Amino acid sequence: MMLNQPASNGAAVCPIDWAGCLSQHEGWLRSVIRARTGEPQAVDEVWQEVSLAAIEQRAPLAEVSKAPAWLYRLAVIRSIRYRRERARHKQRLSRLAGGTNGCPQPAEGPFEWLVREERRQIVRQALSQLSGKESEILVLKYHLRWSYARIASVLGISESAVDARVFRARERLRQKLANVLEEETES
Image (cartoon, rainbow, N blue to C red; front, side, top):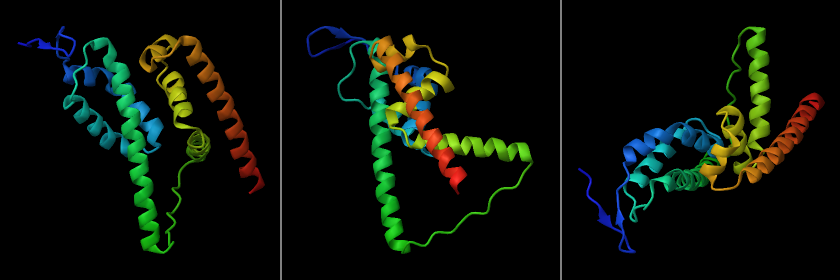
């Protein structure tokens, strides 16, 4: 049985079922984390931090409807923090290693697999050159196939703002892809 707790303004607050809320929004939040960190192996680590922060929050949310936007902001903040920590770690390692770096052997496979992997690599390279917001909005729209309305409600912006962001992100991705392909043909 959940007991109502008094809020700071005197109104009763019904505690949010964070386990249920986290499991409900886990899929798209993991995609946001992946887009923001750029590292698939970082998703689990950052997700654990987001989950722990949600459960241990100091000031309970008054409305369940605000949870997705709050979780989104929390995921973005934790992702940025992760990227900063990783950058510092890489700098320390490169100083310690003296700049030496081993080159992994390329994987071999059928021609179709190789072409598909090269395309993925080109797209990933272009996406990594976009800002976190740009890559994130493209992931939500095209990878997760979310509607503008859903994106707008989660990000806390209007649908026209989502439309504008998607348009700008697509244009920047086209530019980056053209630059990457141009660099590939010059090599």
